[in-house]
Length: 258
Image (cartoon, rainbow, N blue to C red; front, side, top):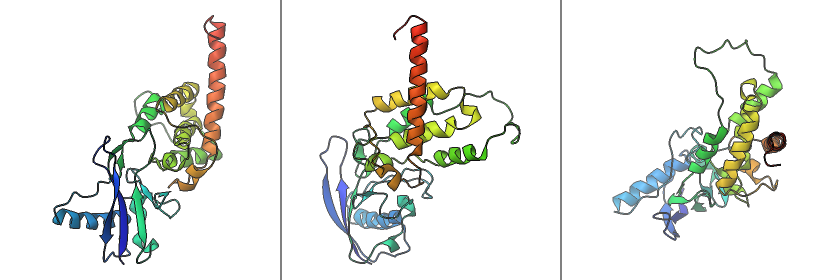
């Protein structure tokens, strides 16, 4: 098949950027989208032109690094699919495709389709962990966890931090990502000791990174390649509210700010 690609090209963060058009000819339908771009880049390099910059690593839908927007949809038209898992058989001969990076103030463009997602790293560093004594792993049956909680925790832990939720949200909110990271630890016994502090710190960092507020539109859930439910946002809000009220009460009792 032959495709017409309109690709966002931007040299660096300060460059204004622009769309450039390329032809992708003789595309094998069994190629992944990234493999198709590899072939286009080989032709560009052979002709002495700068290849299209896009991020990738595992190419197995695990690392979350390969995302960008195809025809206005984060990760392209197939649900619960990352760019590296999207195959060209889902497109038709003669299709015109528009490729753009994630659009969010908190995700500045580094080059072409690559954005800086280090804001996510800083949210994780603020509280997305549990403190545990080192040593051998405990027996798997030593700590009983209700299956419903374990299932919900595992569903939330599936988040790969790709940023599609931010790109799809009209407010550029990272509520689904932050909610998933807070939820998967808060649902397990190991995460209870730091549950309140985790919610306060991660939400504070979320706000510091200038992500937008969540208004429950649901676009984040629709484009999430791991199908994470917006239920995690409600859980994050509950944990944050409970922690904020407890923290305020403690400060008041200690004679601090009310």
